[in-house]
Length: 399
Image (cartoon, rainbow, N blue to C red; front, side, top):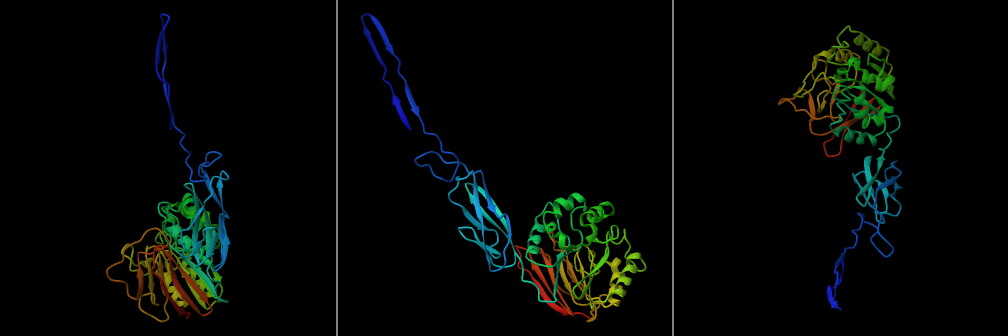
């Protein structure tokens, strides 16, 4: 601070009074603008960082390889030091110069920061390709809500897994509307839409005719208004069924059009291994919903034709059963059921006593079930989202 003072003087001369005004002036240097860099130096003041951009904004980096990212401050020259960080160093690390190294399958956000501003790049590290002759089927149910981030966590897991994605219904909460599919599901699992083969749940039918679901997925969801269809995946035949609002909108019982279609499809199948999925589980140890007998005719037809695996959602848990028959009795020639309601929208509690043949249960982890489908056999792995260490894995043979 600089101070200047003028002294007061008074004089009288020749009978004339003369008064000199006095003043005191204080000046203070200007306050520097809000910027971390460059520092004030000879030549002028710094410029505030308005934004940071990272190029490329997204990248797929193979495991064990590297990718150089570049950060640019706006306006140019407003930052001389950039700080780099990774949201998931188990998937990808980043050096002080922005060099990304892919560590393991999954996804991570690499960020660059300066002057209080942050830019980022979405990094995907794909998983190892499956062995020759093996197909990957991966997914979950009870997925997306705009009021939670569980679906973003599980979508990040999908980023690192190749193959076909399945959904087990209740894909977009609360009512499966077109808006919820676009804004809630679309912003997470939606980036895998091109490789997704979906099934609907009861929440889809809170919108009349599940119009949001059929409109979003189009032909990938089968015939509009039906929601049941089948496809082949390598040496496996995959059947997608529609248990809708507890089978009250589209029938599931013996003799219903859907059950008759199922039997005809099974009769025409030429693949040795069969997997089916839909929303409501015939068996589950969850406290919220429990067993659902309305889909019993599905189980009977699948069992009679020697199906191997059934996947369901609805109960917001993960549960694996030993092979069993339609009556819930252990049977080495029966169907192995997985309940995979761990897609991202909350968790439910289990009953005190588990259902017979229940082998593994978890109701704290978000995650997806990854199936490796080979000729005559299969492997399974529950892949947890960030924040959980629970997993489950094993293998089995087709009938």
